Length: 243
Image (cartoon, rainbow, N blue to C red):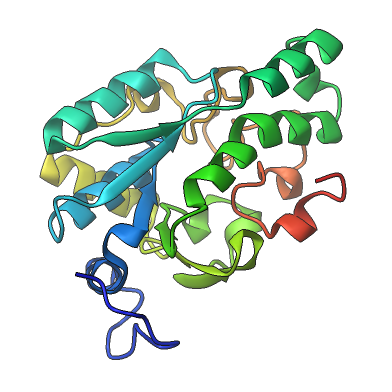
């Protein structure tokens, strides 16, 4: 059972230790905390680490309507492996219909503002609903992933979502550590990684990367690196003045 967290509920543990941080977080928040999963390599590792502590940990996912079939396949493999219910959240139908009627199917390629609008409708708004009744959420974010995440903390106050706690237990992990863990534990993973993908989102916005490219070079490849966030992991007041 969870207890009311103090301002330093993580005291006494190494917050860079993913297993220890997840164990303390689950102890404190219980079912008032959930793991956000896009079924990336990172998220599968976080799910496995958490399941070893609490098999009934909550997991939610955002179905944007444009995910790759390989992503759904990975989601199902993880669901069966852990016998867990995935809490799926979808975009509002009316908002998607209005966007596509007025701006077409690929408006996100026309400008950064249009891309952010699409991300807001398909990802940010559903995330807001997913987090509405939670006290904490867990992500698979890592500092190595991009220039926008280099200063990522393992524990944050998410002011964009009412000041709830945001836990990033594998913030310090490298991609080599992820693969070592995945192979050692025999975890399911998205088969797109075997085809050169390094970061996987919506199908029209994701491609494989070339040798030597940045890990997130395949996400919104027509934009500069400093713009490559969808709005899920930034303070909403700083994300876009139009939201």
